[in-house]
Image 1 (spheres, one colour):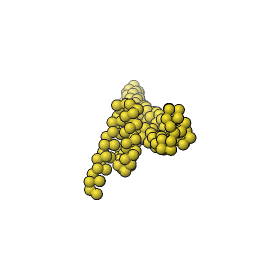
Image 2: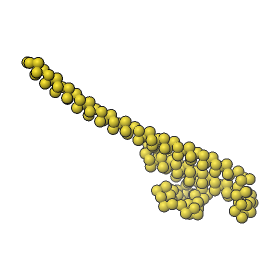
Image 3: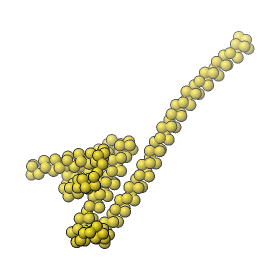
Image 4: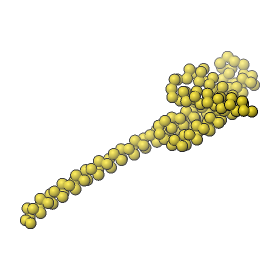
Length: 175
């Protein structure tokens, strides 16, 4: 074997090593790209969760009796004890269903909540709605009065309310 033959073999091995390195690099870049996308989704979810937390805190702060009375008066109503309690209940339901649970729903749709965890969350919501007819009515009234968008979350809520009402009717029929 001549020196020229060894150089050719070395060149071939070197070319093969470069090709293998490029293939390896391609797969690593795909993996890094996927990690960047996942980190971006998690960062966005964290930002939205923070906004949701602030929104819920603000709405629950507005449920203070004096603030409810001011709201009712400012809108031309009489701030009776019953009107204040109704407004407080409305704000609690709004904070829970239209902000907190809406954020969980969106995170599940974005793939940030496992299917098993989402099923447990949804089942808990269903049990709560079954046991709380006032919350069901208020949630439905809020969706109807606010001209709720015809989106996936609203459809989900309407379906869940209907399912909870069906469960409650079946329970009452058994009793």
